[in-house]
Image 1 (tube, one colour):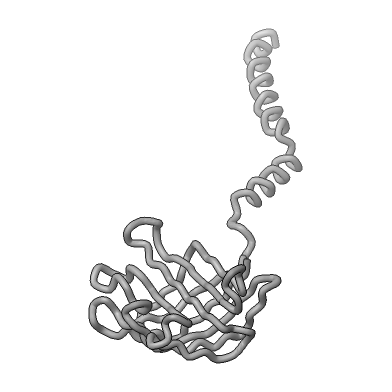
Image 2 (tube, rainbow, N blue to C red):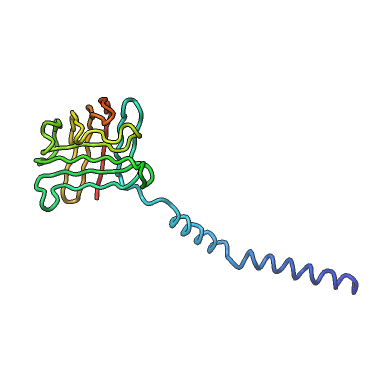
Length: 181
């Protein structure tokens, strides 16, 4: 027995230390810490911000930099929406929609001949199509589904054409945006 004691004592201490280490962060505390850490690491709650469309048959959807404003100070009856796709660098693709004279939901036809009133553009689609819409030209129909200044909320569907710096017209289909601040 005396010979076993020197062997069993270190083994018992080692086993006890391992067990104490596991118990040191009690199971309930581990679960609590894990759920707190998971909550902190989880993406933010759904903001509801979406800007998406099909451009010449290819899906495009913004992934960041969402902004919307309804009747901002100094711009009576204006609705502004912008969003970006991709990294914030020279290749960042940006979308802008600016409407004037908007009182609420309804249909608005945007044409470049009245660009001082409304404009829509999609920038940096690729190296040849740097500017689409805006000063290049556009013919878009926007169906405003919801417009609210307080709280700020814009929801709309849109489709039509954007003239491109490459000299061609881009077909915009199934455009949809939802933005709130």
